[in-house]
Amino acid sequence: MQKNINIRNKKASFQYELLETYVAGIVLSGTEIKSIRLGKASIAESFCEFNEKGELFVINMQIDEYSHASHFNHKPKASRKLLLNKKELKKLHKEVRTSGLTIVPLNVFINERGFAKMKIALAKGKKLYDKREAIKERESKVRLDRVKKSFNN
Image (cartoon, rainbow, N blue to C red; front, side):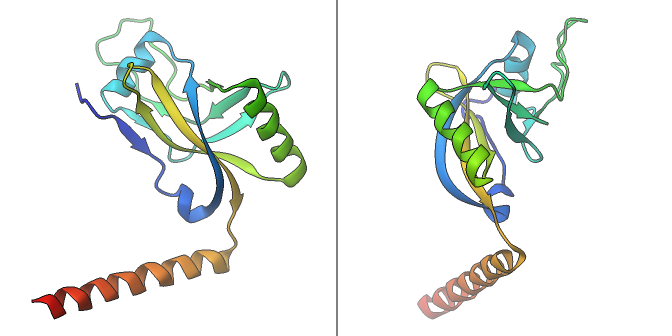
C-alpha cells in the first residue's frame, strides 16, 4: 500500500481558469476506499454537479473495482457525494447558477487521519486563444531553462 496517494486531474488547469479552491470529503464504501489507497482511481473526465436537494456530487469519477472483494464490490463510475460546510455549498451553488461557472475536481488524496479528500475548484472555461497563450508561455519557459542550463555549464 502506498503512503502518499495523490490522484490528479492534469487537464483541469489547462482547460479552466481556476478561481477558488476547496477541500471536500468524499462519501465512499469500504471497497472504494481500498481501491483509492491502492491508487486505482481516475478523475480525468469527472466534474461536479448539484442535485435537486442542493447536495454536491462528483460525476464520472473512475474507481476501479477492488481485486480482493467478493460479489459485494462497488460500481466503478457511480456518482459520489462530496461533503462541504453548508455555507460553502450555498456559495458554490449560487456561483454555478448565476455566473455560469463550473466545479472541477483537481486531485484526490488521503489526509493524515486516513480519510479520502478531494480538492475541487470553482472554475471558468478557457477560450481557445487562452489555451494557445498557455502553450506559448510553457514553451518559452522550457527554452529559457535550456539556455540557463547551457550557460551554467
